[in-house]
Length: 553
Image 1 (tube, rainbow, N blue to C red):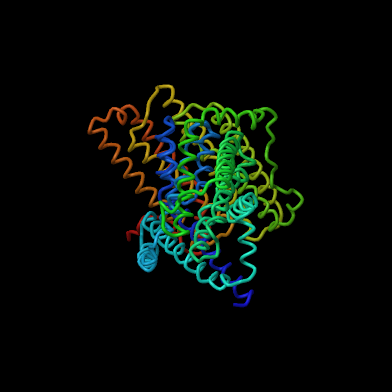
Image 2 (cartoon, rainbow, N blue to C red; image 1 turned 45 degrees about the vertical axis):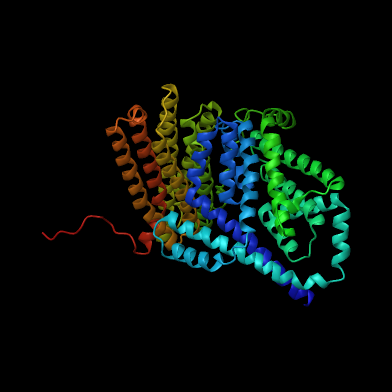
């Protein structure tokens, strides 16, 4: 095969593999994201349960990095300790190894089944969870298909005269192979994809097991490096978790690398083929890391605390974000409106920073996080005032009717976003403080309902930002349809809460008022986001002036 055609086919297969793993992760996050968050919240006080939760989450997400980033956010807000988060990440690495073990099985016959079932669920499903399950099934099918394509693309190079010296070099220089595996996983941003590709090479006879094992160890180290890189600008607790996991993977990998130099591991006892032995070795390595390092998470957390000292209190000398309002373009209405839109986007990002951690304050005391939310609200209030005055000054010039209408719409959006900030600080923070002061706790079902509503509101915030920027009619329709879906969720939660009250649930009785007020607050926040879509739909004749039916007199 010509080298160009070979590289084209191999690159296409690898890109499909990377896209497929991301597709599965996206589907799981959208369908079960809030449920996974609840699992972490429920297990946060037990190290063993932390590890089991990490295994479950990573096996579903097919990404230990995604789990690491998720628990890093919990640690940054004080909901989870660094020790518990390290236990979760250790389990997550074993969870991804389980996912690799499953995907390496001879289940190619599932490809057409998963494609058909997944396609039908995604295209015809009405509920979001059903559609995302379809996405996951199709993603798994694409992974299996990409592995087959990798095998077909690499088959011609088995007879290449350049293959033998490269393989021999990797087999003899284990440290170079280790570094190469780490680089491969970091470039792919996925240890799952890297190990599956190495297993495919082994299955084709291109990569001998002697070279594959150090590459796999390196891929595990590279997986830890990904989280270190992605958390480099995050809270110091998040960086400690990523660094601790990276240290575990590097130290464990180098220890096994020395072992490989002196001892031939009896991998033929666990699998018959080189590819099976490689994948089994990957799983056993991660299982060994959990067994060895799980009891050591406390000293490991202490070590990372020395390596990553606490940052200076952000409340001291806190820098306010720069405004996007450019007064130099006030005489150019088009540019001024664009400037106001950018400031609204910045304002929305501040709202997201306030809204994201607020539910966690219902279950844990974190004075710094609560204070940070109040400080951000001050920025939101100033941004709202600035936008109103800026657009009012712009209105004093010569504007077309469309420009004047757009200015009024942007002013209304700014007012609604400022109201969201008020709801978060004056309602949700108050309710969370009341929960902690009274030492109350929601029932398990009640907490799940509230966190699902919260996750849905956050998702609608992202959709509303897309609508604000793109003014896309279809996205605006989807956003308004979310209002009806949110109303349904609210009614279901309200009815379920009343059922629990009727059954005499002590937790539901004690937290009844707080539960219902929290639902109302989240519903109002969601409604404020949805108003961003109204001007676009009205402009295109897709919004009624009134929901009341006309009655002839």
